[in-house]
Length: 276
Image (cartoon, rainbow, N blue to C red; front, side):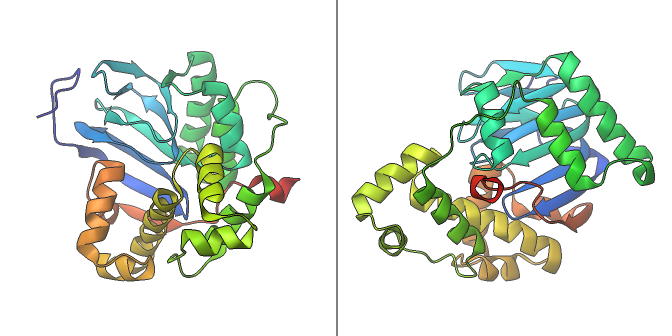
């Protein structure tokens, strides 16, 4: 069994979870104890606690605690709630806000200074305690991310061909997209496209498609409350395939989504081309 700083295992909720989901990410507000075992996913993971501290360990097994934690995309890590109450936010690293946050943290797990974590926690607390007087959920999510970013958004923009492909994937009803077909839409050979995509996105094309399938499945679970419907809607072979993939990326089975309240919202983030 994996062992955490607090000495407990097997994640469980200490406060009922609330999930706000969109295709590409989510905001989870909850309290938890126990360890989520090693896993990796394409999102930037942001943790902000209102009470207590959470902890993260990377491959070296050393736990680091804080009120604010940011984990870069595609980095294997374990998570421990340590009895804290707060939010976990998954940010699309290919969005404007995601690129800005990535430029701030680099490629390492970052413990957020309290001077930045406290304002984000205060906004989160207002949302939980006085929702009619606080920011709407989309504005809250953007505020949390921007409060953790340094300087101004980077001027560098991704290759427009890759942005076009990301938009195509996000808008496609059928995620059974072949590398060859997608490469042709941006007039590149499959090998050149594959190299450029991984260079720009940090993930192989087929692995990225799998990530989008999982996040689409999460939204379907929120709407339909069945794994079978989610697997079918997001082009998995079956519910077992979805469960295995979900566990690899999140360290937990997809049934965790069926605990607590679920809300489907519009994505709070924009791709670069939409703001150009």
